[in-house]
Image 1 (cartoon, rainbow, N blue to C red):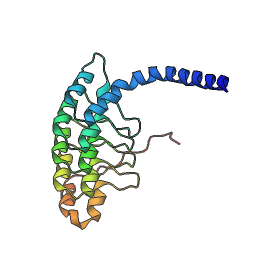
Image 2: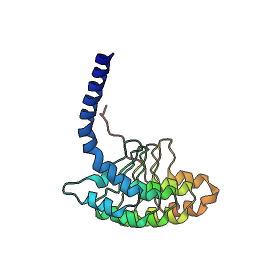
Image 3: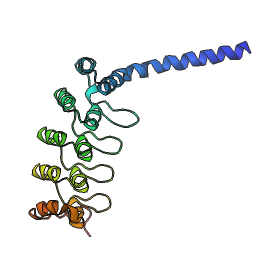
Length: 199
């Protein structure tokens, strides 16, 4: 019994020793995301400012969320500005493929949408379902967001995985006639020819 117990203890000690380097490797990333979630500005800045640090773009292992997703979900303009100053990638995608711009549109955070556009976030990126921020603005029936995205170059003809584009969605919903009118002033952008071998 004691020999079996001794082997179990030894196995546990070896497993713990092997886990330490992995934990140390991810501790700064984990600590940074925790600081952002806890709104601990000093801790976040200290971690982001370490020489060679890339924690500003670290992602949560479960959700795929980076700090930019966390602050966008809570509508925190101050933190969004801080992360941008520290080199955050504003086009990172979470596990669902949502960018901060798509999330800001989903939550109808107009200040965030305008700020992300001003900071040059890409307006035509699609999530895993092929949805863009513009499609989400149409679905939310939000004229102001749709106009801001259009003015920034959003494509009203970029369809999701089901074939639904913002233009089609607007034309099919009488409640967004004002958005459909916006789109009517923009020539339809047809998809280019498929690339492939010629016959």
